[in-house]
Amino acid sequence: MSVRPRIDFVSPLPPVRSGIADYSADLLPHLAAVADLRLIALPGQDAVAGDWAVAPASELGAGGRLPLYQMGNNRHHEAVLELALRQPGVLTLHDLVLHHLLLDVTMGRNRFFAYKERLARDHGWVGEAAALAKRWGAYGAAPLFALPAHRTLLRRQRGVLVHSAWAAGLVEEDDPEVRVRAVPMGVPLPPPVDPAAARELRARFGLPAEGPVVGSFGFQTPIKRTAAAIHALAAPGLERVHMLIVGEVAPALDLESEARRLGVADRLHITGFLSFADFAAAIAAVDLCVNLRYPTAGETSASLLRVMAAGRPVIVSDYAQFAELPEAVAVKVPLGRDEAAALPAALRELLSSPERLRAMGEAARRHVAARHAPERAAAAVGEACAEWAEAEPPGDAPSGAQLAVAAPGSIVWGRLDGEIEVAGAELPWPEGERRQLTIRLRNRGFARWDRGERGPGGIAVVVKLLAGGRDLLAGRPWLPLPRDLLPGEEIALTTEVRRPAGPPSPPRAPGTPRLPVPPGAIRLWIEPHMFGGVALSELGGPRWERDL
Image (tube, one colour):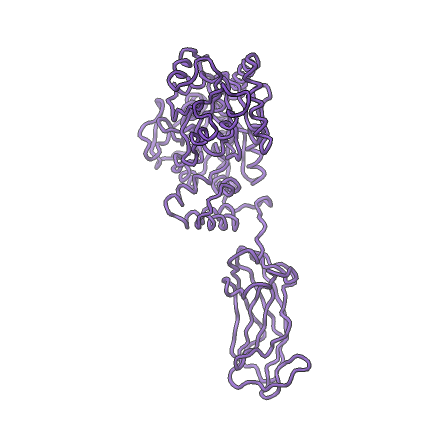
């Protein structure tokens, strides 16, 4: 690295209970060896780890220093998000998906319109639709993972760092203009396992002194599929296996009730949050770690790498970033219906093979030492910062075709904003005169106005001459759109209309009697309608009318 970058490091730090805070504390000494490093104090963070120069957030980037943000998907990173949106830097994206954070700091505070605005800014009409669904209580998880809510944030950065090739590929695919690079995570090797500490922790949490123990580490959420591991405890051949869950459990999970229902509650042990020393002892106390995932927020699990660094083999889902782990260190189980049989089978096979467990554990420790050494991670981060220090962010307006999302059709969208202009109907319009009208339509909304031949949902223009409570043009065919009208587009249609000349009959169908023109004013009325639906004016669309 030819240039020593001057970095303002922005991250939650211990004692914040966050895996990213622990990651940052491990990385800082090594990053300081390759960069001029300063910490930025975040609101509410009274203490920072280590003996570092500290500056307030108001001085972020002063004197040409480069902000280096550590971005995660929980409220600990709210201040990081706000700073990164204001001032470009290099951003380490620990979670590809940031939708949970957005939901927490907006809807979690009854700020619906802020949620809708941010989600629409990143995901267009799809984001607005998802926001509306959330407003009315549709709290399914699919939109949280399908809409990562990070596009604006990434496009305001000079570059983005992630911790897996899979994550880098997703960022590149979504937005080719964003600079992205995969770097090692930076996990130090702990001291060798302490058998005495392991025995003490087993005794403290009611685990057997000698029996097999499977562990799950880190904050427990539904996507970690811990319930699937509890189900495996009830499988034949695993009656002696206990499970140790280390970390806080999300309110959405009731693992103990599930264990009671399956008859394995006496073999489930939940510790809650542990200190760093106890966390290490808990890793030493297990024989094998289960770290399943579906769906994924795109994170490289620091807790998983710490387990591997301590020399413990792992079982993971054969999915996303976890598929990159070598076979020598991780057994992979499939997602879907096959998981229910594959997971107990893998547990039976591994727990009955102490030599294989030992070999996998040693290989796991070597893997972390070779791929994720903190000094190697710091060097990669420093190189990226030096390279991107003067780079221009892509900016808010994406140009890549990959960012385009097909507009919804008119039949499925609840608002169809637009404009209408009519040329040829200028006054005065003498009685009996026939004119050609040009009707120009503009689509100003999110949805596509479907062409008329699509049938239900297709758009056609209705032209009426209203007099005396009836339409003098009744029975005349509507003017269907000849093509789909996409958001922002316009189209022109033409038609002929004759102003009635008093007593002669208005246009009529063959065989119907002649009727006199009713007395009083005649109104020309032009409005798009939806086949099988309603007039567009009832959906925010345009209407044009004039008294002749």
